[in-house]
Length: 200
Image 1 (cartoon, rainbow, N blue to C red):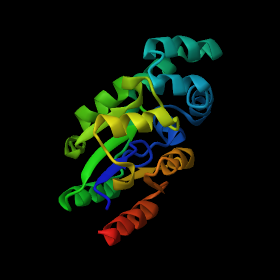
Image 2: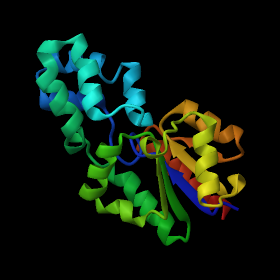
Image 3: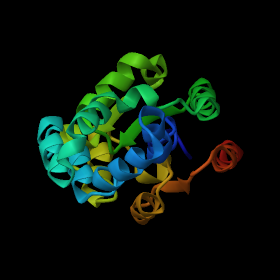
Image 4: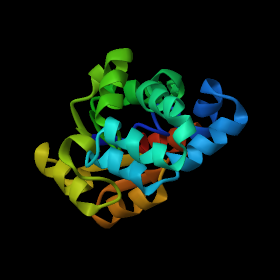
């Protein structure tokens, strides 16, 4: 029986679309360059892992384009303001909560960015537990972060379901016995929710 629902954040609860975020901040040419320098860089994962700070990331990314240092600094410190809520998926989370499921978050996210998101959006208050990659120096799709949330909240894998927009993350969760769903859009999220409700 499914008792626990584990949600990713970016791409599931908040609409993570780097190109759209950056083009809201800057012109198309600069936005394209900034995405290449930052989000497409392996150092972006290190931000999520918490192994480098935002200030360190500014220095690293600015080496690629010194003339864009101001834009890089702004983007890293303000991107959460341009990250809209996927309200339909948040409503699904609230519905599951009302049906008696325990809700958890397991997300790759920069520490400062997630703190701003929690301050900005009160729906995070409905979750019973939150695990953020940068806080514990672990990152999806590595197995250890899934082991961490299971141990931290005394969860049984077969009693959990997991929603994520990354197929690699879903694959790892599934390999561990968690009921995992690839949910890159609202239709997939809605279908997954219906499957869970049918099992009850």
